[in-house]
Length: 311
Image (tube, rainbow, N blue to C red; front, side, top):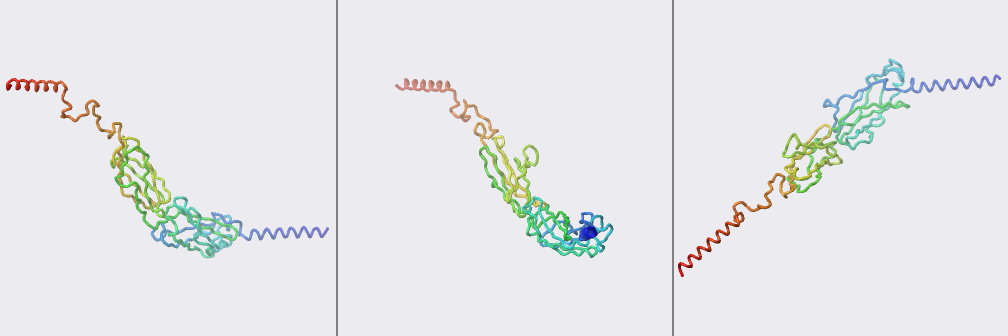
């Protein structure tokens, strides 16, 4: 009977020790967002825009809170905050660029939480990435058991946006109905989107002014304009503007000459001549046939009189 009591007592003791060690291993439970905040100082130009090789200093400005850390505990105090000693840094575009895969830029950085205002330095070579305004810089903090991720949006802007090269060429002619494609060749690494305008006669508003939304893919921006009939004839001015999310650069303006034959075979506003009177005004074909008969009779009569006189 006594041996069974020892067994139960030993089991309870082991369970108690296991529970205490489990709680102690991570302070008082896992760290949550409420435990501390952080800040990333603006870079040298005063904005979140980065270019070239940059070092971002990340400072922990508050180590207090409820949950994993003791309430009110500073970074030098006891609790789970002091266990966060490793940080990984990642970067990823939200979709405006081709860099949509989470990319590790700094791995397993040392962090000393025992320093008030402890900080780490994150290095990034922005030339590895396309220019864009939708990048997320994510810091993943690790305490041996749990991860806590914090992120902020940054802009990568390494170069100006090259001006798009247009197709078709300037003064290109369209002589039949067509749904014409207009293209702008752009610098893929420095472009995330495009805008376009096309207008008859260079109009800046009204029914002859259009702002289509181009499709951007790789190094090309394209849009379509339908020219259905001679009613669309005229000089159409078009241009494409490329953007990297921060800067924009417009192309030159090209002109497309649209000359689709109308129902009469000419331009839409040409007057149609009477089918029964297609001769040029003032020509002999306009003289009435009865006039020709009278003139002929007179000539014959004169010839007869002259013959009688001189015979």
